[in-house]
Image 1: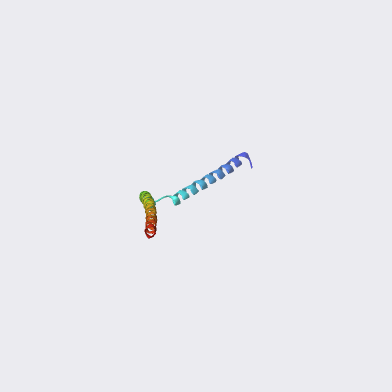
Image 2: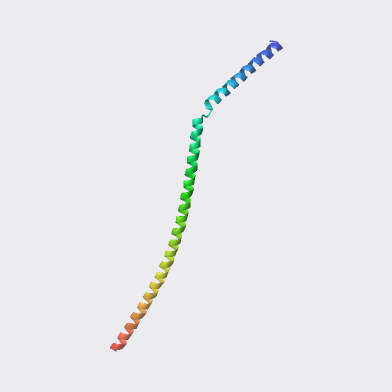
Length: 111
């Protein structure tokens, strides 16, 4: 095989490889092309996702507001409970003092 034949064979092999590559790319492009219906579906899914994210954000804001309100009510209720318990303790002490006073007076009256 001389030099000219080698150049022709290598050129033919390169041409065939180029044609096969171009054909494969064209076929892949043809089969993977996105249709307008698919684009419409993607747009619909994107808008549905956006709406769902907005609903989630609103729900999270509502939950946070509700949690803050309930925490505030709980702290108020705990403060009221503490005040009531202090008052109850004071009333018990006064009742005990009155019982002691009545007991002492009844002893002194009988003696």
